[in-house]
Amino acid sequence: MTNTRTQVLRQAETLINGERQAHYGPPQENFAAIAAMWMAYIGHPITSADVCNMMALLKIARLRNGAHYDSSVDGAGYLALGAELAEPDKNSL
Image (tube, rainbow, N blue to C red; front, side, top):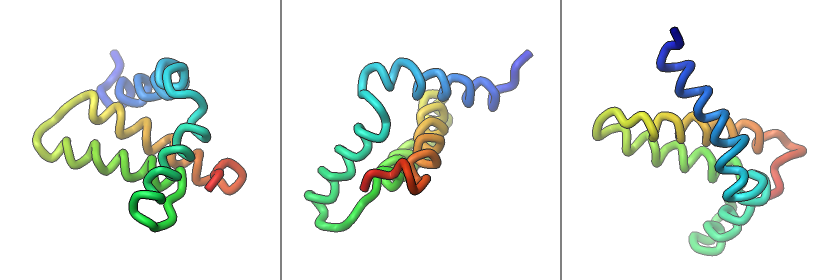
């Protein structure tokens, strides 16, 4: 029997490497586009990894109101993508 933490991580892995990537394209391109739009809006530099981390924080803020499995899955996915995009050769901004 699989525990909840493993289920969350496996589902996040499935989403970020499958369904979400199919819908939104490669993470490097998608989060670079978001970073560029956010930079234009706030006038402050933002990296693709920053976008992932801030999206994870959004999910954590929602979790303050109670447990939501989907927010946990999404948060884990954003943090994994942020770790990848923080690697110097993968961070486009």
